[in-house]
Structure formats: structure tokens, C-alpha cells
Image (cartoon, rainbow, N blue to C red; front, side):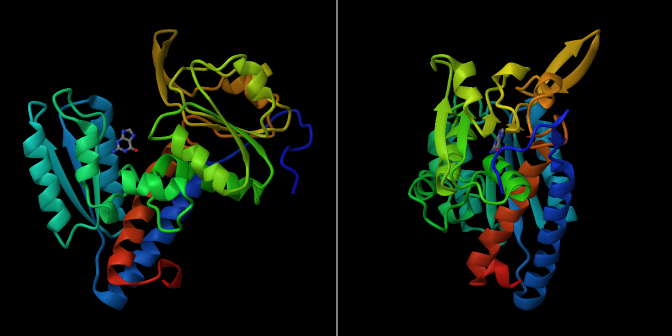
Length: 302
Ligand code: GUN
């Protein structure tokens, strides 16, 4: 398999919506089988502090898909005046609750709360977001039992599904956040890619991008990546979900100028319908993994 596709008039789409649906179906089948074999029904607890509208949409979608997959969903909504001690006390209760296999505290948290302290209080075995320093360290050192953050895990699955082996590819990760950029770079190193992490201080970003067989854009800047930044035939994964108003209408656009990039790339994810649907599908898969580990079952055997 070559890592850049042959020249075409336009890129092929990486259909995240379809792949997420098949991952959810696979997870739901395994949940049934885990329940039948061990009596364990995986449970996911989601904690939302405050009224951030985007977070409310995510949390509602998470709860709906959790139930559809056959898991228990526990939702905890707290006012935005919640103090750190109160939130830590809830995390402690969830850590001890045997019905809860996965805990997710939705970010961002209100200013009065130290998010790092909260993430570190979550039992690493229930940390389905993969944000606890223990899981971050496991991923960075290539340990097999790391909980991997859902968005970069979804991106990696799409790339492997599309390209097969990624070994030897030059990968450029645009963005260095703890949620996407850094874990994405660690995952690509694990796949034997040659990885560059670019950010706001990177010199000659277009030139760095043009060297990449795989370009992951995760900066939250609408259509920042231009068509002529892309190597012909490259695979482009657009993590951006930016709300813009155009001609009086709201729409979602990625971090990549899709129309221009699609004329140059070999493969590209659309926005919406690319990376977005993979995130919750991976969250469900991580919760199943956590429940299997607790039950002492290899999830591949289900
Ligand atoms: N806010 C935006 N993305 C995420 C995510 O993947 N996990 C959590 N906990 N909060 C988020």
C-alpha cells in the first residue's frame, strides 16, 4: 500500500459516519455477549458542570448513544457555581460505584475548578477519556493497556481503515492540545510514522504541511489549512468543528478549506460526518474495554 494516493481529480471521502455506525454496532454486540457471559452491564457516568451550550449537546448525544448500545447511562448535571470540593466528592462516589465502569467529566469546567486536579482524581481504570496522567504516561510509553483519548483514537481508526499500515509515513499534527494533538502524535509514533507536531509558533507552516503524507488538523480555526498546503495524494483528517455564519446562515466547517483541499488530497474527512461521529463511538468502545478489564475478560474474545 502506498502512503499517498495516485493523482485524481478529487479526493475520496473518509466516511466517519458510516465507520462510527459499524463500530457502535460491533460494541453493542460485544456488550450483549459480556452481559450474557458475566452478568456485567457496562455503565458510563457523564458529569456536566454548568450550561455551556455545546457541552449540553455533546452530553445529550453521549447519553442517547450509551443507552442505544445497551449500557447504563448515569448523568450528573451540576450548577456552574459548583465548587471543587463538591465535584471531587462526586468523582469519589463514582470511583467507588461498581455499576460505573467509565467516568467522563465534560470539559471545559468553570473557572473556579482546577480541571487537572479533577482529572487526576478519576480512577485511571475508569478514565474512558484517557486524560489521567497515568493513562497519558502509558500512551506516551507505548503500554498496551492505556485508555486512549477518544478523538485521536477515532482519527487513527479512520486512517488505518483507509490506508492499512501507516509505517514510514510522514505525519503532521497541527495542534498540541492534551485532548487531540499530543495523544494523536503519540499514537502515530506507535504506528511507526515520522511525526511532526506543529503549532502557533511553527515557522513556515505551509511548507511543513506540504511534506506530510498524513495531515491531522486540530486547531479550531475555520478553514485555516489551504489547498496549496497539501501534498498531492495525502490523507487529510480534519478534527475542527467550527460554527461560522455565512450569507446569514450558520454552518459547521472544519480547520481545512475542504473544497480546495479535496482537489489535491487523496483522502479527506468531511465536516460534519468525518471525525465527529467517531468520538462518541470510541467513548462507548473505551467504556466496554473498562468493563471487560474489570470482569477479567479479553474484549477480543467476545
Ligand atoms: N470537551 C471537548 N471534547 C471533550 C472530550 O473528548 N472529553 C471531555 N471530557 N470533554 C471534552
